[in-house]
Length: 282
Ligand code: NDP
Image (cartoon, rainbow, N blue to C red):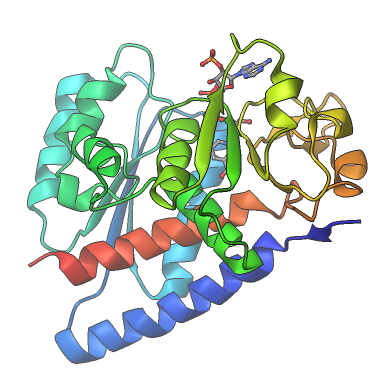
């Protein structure tokens, strides 16, 4: 049976140290890290995420501002708000909660955020810089996963890492971070042929698909580190990941559960990125 990684515990440790660092920053330089979160419309999952981010800010001693805009907000007025926040010296991080309503271009909105305040790490400048190895901010979920992997003590150089999923927010940045740590990286997606043959090679397997329990024990190498990013709600309201946890846990050396694995790390890394922004901005 593999070791079950307690994401809640690691995230809490990180948040505790962020709280101390934020207090020191305030005392020494009079700076309070400020995070503005913008939500357009009433998506129920977004509401939950935004509330969690506000709570995390409060606990860390950050300034938290929430801009809840109606679903019919125009792109122009959203861009105007972002411009105001770009110029606001009390705000160090700007996060636009996705998804946005269809009449608004997500790409244009993200590109309008000052890359120095782009604590989600989604701005083309930061994504491009991730490719060359020197981003200002790394997207929170992959950054959290790298933190989890580093705490297992596993050395990455030369290891086979397989990332299932190629989204801009998880799969692609995840693969780049693993590559930067000298793993041999393969990215899989919906057109990958014989997925099981590829995933079975992985020393480190990251599942970021959004399909309940699709990675079963036959797809996993014995002793692999298995990181489950998926969050899927079943008809009975139960939350499960992309990995068939019970059977895969028997084969893996380390495994993250859902819930309580990657999820809590994402918010901890958002706090870390915001603290970094407050420390770095002139
Ligand atoms: P996307 O839907 O943007 O991407 C899913 C990826 O999975 C795509 O690249 C898709 O391939 C690939 N895929 C779909 N079906 C298959 C298949 N049968 N075999 C192989 N690959 C497949 O999702 P996200 O990256 O945004 O999120 C992935 C999951 O992670 C979701 O469950 C989401 O809720 C969760 N998540 C969790 C977070 C957390 O903090 N815990 C944060 C962000 C996401 P293709 O590109 O070819 O379509």
